[in-house]
Length: 198
Ligand SMILES: CC(C)(COP(=O)(O)OP(=O)(O)OC[C@H]1O[C@@H](n2cnc3c(N)ncnc32)[C@H](O)[C@@H]1O)[C@@H](O)C(=O)NCCC(=O)NCCS
Ligand SMILES: Nc1ncnc2c1ncn2[C@@H]1O[C@H](COP(=O)(O)OP(=O)(O)OP(=O)(O)O)[C@@H](O)[C@H]1O
Image (spheres, rainbow, N blue to C red):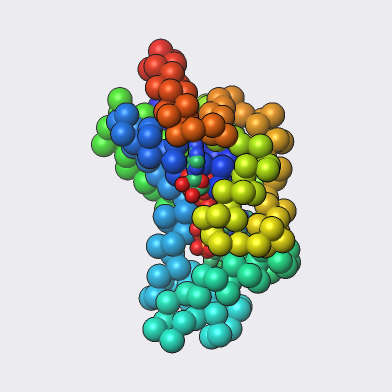
C-alpha cells in the first residue's frame, strides 16, 4: 500500500514520517529528492543557475539555499519558474522510487512525503492521503523557531502554500501534531493499526 503524506511547512511531516519509519514503513521524501537535484553537477541545478544567475551559488559551487528561499518565498512568479524547473525531475525520481520499493517489498507500507501534494494535484495518485496538521498559530511559531525567521518571513512562507485548514478538509487521514510528541506518537500507533486493517 502506498499513501501520500503532506501538511503545511513545519506542521511536522518529517516528525510523523520518522515515527512511521520506526514502525516499519518505507519512506520516500520529496524534500530529500529536491535537495539531491540541487547538488553541483546535476542538470536541474544548471537550469536553476541559467535562470537565477551565478549569484545563486556559493563560492564552493553549492546552491545558496537562503538566497533562493528569499527570492521564491517573496516573488510568486519566480517561485512558479523554480517549480517549473525542479518539479518534473523531482516527480520522476519519486515515481521511480515508488515503483522500485513496491517491487522490492510488495507487503510494505510505503509513505511518500510530498509537501506540495495538493498544490501539485497529486492526490489522485494515492488511495489515502495523510495530512499532518497543526493550527496556523502553532505552525508559525515552530517555523519561526526552527528556521530563525521573523514573523513576516514565516508568514511569506505559509503564503506560498495552500492553507493548512484547507488541506485538513481534503485529507482522508489526519494526525494532529499540535500537542506533545508523545500525543503524536499515540496517534501514529493508532494509525498504524488502522492501516494494517485496511
Ligand atoms: C527554495 C529552497 C532552496 C529553500 O531551501 P530551504 O533549505 O530553506 O528549505 P527546504 O528545502 O528544507 O524546504 C522547506 C519547506 O519549504 C516549503 N517549500 C519548498 N519549496 C517550496 C515551493 N516551491 N513552494 C512552496 N513551498 C515550498 C516546503 O514545505 C518544504 O518542506 C528549497 O526549498 C527548494 O529548492 N525548493 C524548490 C523545490 C521544491 O518545490 N521543494 C518542495 C517540494 S518537493
Ligand atoms: N509535537 C511537537 N511538539 C513540539 N515541537 C514539534 C512537534 N512536532 C514537530 N516539532 C518541531 O517543529 C518543527 C517542524 O517539524 P518538522 O521538521 O517535522 O516539520 P515538517 O512539516 O517536516 O517541515 P518542512 O515543511 O519544513 O519540511 C521542528 O523543529 C520539530 O522539531
